[in-house]
Image (cartoon, rainbow, N blue to C red; front, side, top):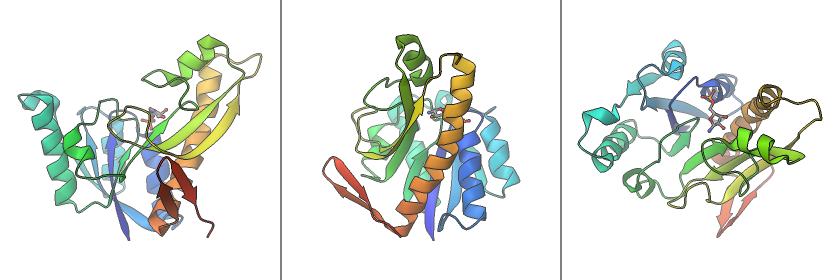
Length: 202
Ligand code: GRF
C-alpha cells in the first residue's frame, strides 16, 4: 500500500476526497499522516475522524523556515510516507522536504497552469476574464507552481458565474481529479519523462 503524507492549511475538502477514495478502495494507498501549519485547520479534525495521525507543526515554534521544513520532513519520514500530497497547503514547501522526496511531492492548483499560479488562482482567472479555467495536479519542485503536470481538467466560465459559483465548480472537479491522479500514482501508472508525465491505463 502506498503511503501518503498530506499537507494542509485549511478546510481540507481535498483531503476528505482522498480519505474517502482510500476508504472506498479507489486508491491502492492510505493516508499515513496529515500535517498542518495551522492548528485550527478543520482538515486536522477530518483526519482524526478518519483515524489518521493529525499533526500541527507550528512554524512559529521554529527559528526559521529551514528549521520548520526540517521538522515537517522528520514527521513525514517518521510515518514512512512514499509520497507527499499538498492539499490546500498555503505555505511554500522548503528544499528540506522537496530534496528528500524528489518527484514525490504532488500539489493541486485551482487553475490551468502555467496560467494563474499563486495563492488566488480562481479569483485571478475570473478577474482576467478568461472563458476557460480549470484544475491542475502537478509534481512540485523548487520552481513554484511549475513542476511537471500530471493531470488537468478544464472548467468553462459561464456568463452568469460569480467567483463563488466558479469556485464551487472548480472544487467539484478537484475532488474527482486529485483522487484519480493519486490512484494512478499508487498503482505505479505515472511515468515521468522530463517535463512530460504519462499516465498508463489500468
Ligand atoms: C483548493 O482549491 C486547492 O486547489 C488550493 O487550495 C484549496 C484547498 O481547499 N490549493 P481544501 O482545504 O482542500 O478545502
